[in-house]
Length: 131
Image 1 (tube, rainbow, N blue to C red):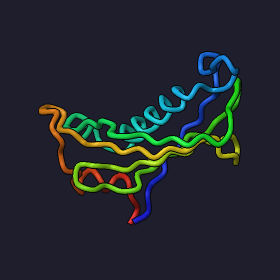
Image 2: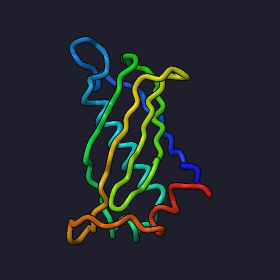
Image 3: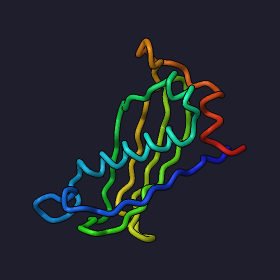
Image 4: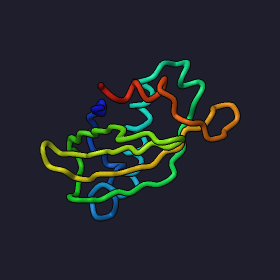
């Protein structure tokens, strides 16, 4: 199965910068979560969004270059795999063709009502892969 990619474009603003005048590490984490959430919302029905929520189990971010004010960045994400209640998601942050940062995150799907872990079903996973 081939992962379906989701892409967003953003522009670095003054509020994204730290005292060194490049994007603060915490902002990258915010972007990683934002693009993951937007991918989920754009991929699945409102019914599924009402049934399930996701929580992060871990984040690993590797920084390759610095992004600065007014940079136009591309956030690309996809789900690498679902296993049981877990999902492994990848995010690449690029400036043109240049890789700025990349992340691997592990998420856990929860029942939206009980807040208990819920096994990822085919009904959910089908929206994230091409066969």
